[in-house]
Length: 496
Image (cartoon, rainbow, N blue to C red):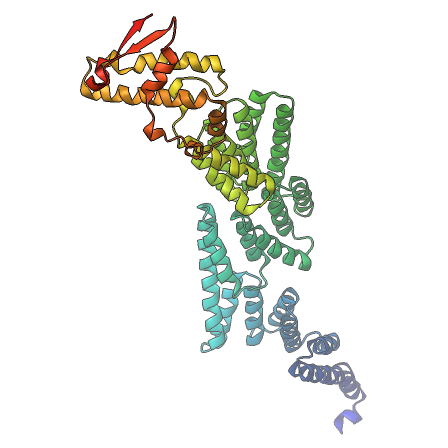
């Protein structure tokens, strides 16, 4: 009754009711509606109601706390973090506000800030089991970050991936952890996985310079250098101080330029220059596995042109060690093996190629190598006579005459039994060689790798003396006489 009698007090009471009581009642109504929607998991409507409550009554900590909880359910953690921070600014004793702020920090990967929040909760409520567990999670993340840093410095990228996977179990919204994992996957050659992680980040944040850098890194390591440079440039536009993107961009441009210079020199026949340019390109970035594999193979091609066949084989082996699916390197190495008569190795490489790509061309290359291997396991009659495989009929006869006289048993009758036995063996081989290489049909079959036994010629029953007689006998040549029963040591030559 006193307020109605005092106009001033009445007016003050009326204004207080109008300015505070009515709006707060309305805000509470919006809050209750929001709570109902939240329980039903209709987070969009709940968010709308809590926002209305805040608009009506912006100094109420619980409204921000409720909206923060809703934003967390919508995985909008940065907005939730802002609301929870506002809530504790309005009321530093608001335990749920500190808990939600800590959880948001943790999900976003800021374990240090999260720890401070959870410690604050425990100051307010020492037995809070959730804060105790989340504090342990935050401490675990800090340890995983430390181990990951050590692993990266040691280039133990598998360890880094492991640590980031463990950290992301509690910090699922941390782009920094995801990007580091993606970068290490790229450095491990797991490009599709790395690209998938980076692409997921870019779908949520198209301006993320780290994710753009990783996308470029994957393309760069897959030898798509032009596209890679585009991503590096885009990353630098978003983050001008991104040192990794700057270095990668520089390396990509330098690698492309040096490789193209090498290709140009090779096409122009400047093999020594091409060899040096490819060697220089190989020093630019040891981490670029696919491009370096191609550079090694290119240098092997140049090496084979320069007759550096052992070096060419070594370069092909390095290319294969970098990329075991690199068919061109297997083919180049196999050809080098063929050129150095390492036929078993050549067959092995051609078999690998044919198992991967069953083409007619690869089948024929394998067949040729198998044939050469088969031929290499027989006596090399050309080598026995000391002539080239393209020797003429006259050259073969001349070589036989020289070798037959050199190894005939009579010439070594005074030698030890062991030497006589060895010379007899060589004398017989010379006769075999001449018999085969002087006969066009046998020579053709021998050259093509066929077994001579198929012609009915049993080399085990071969008599070298008969060939010698036939070759040196006749007017004006050598005459051959001897007592067969007295043994090969009694043979002698007599000029006619």
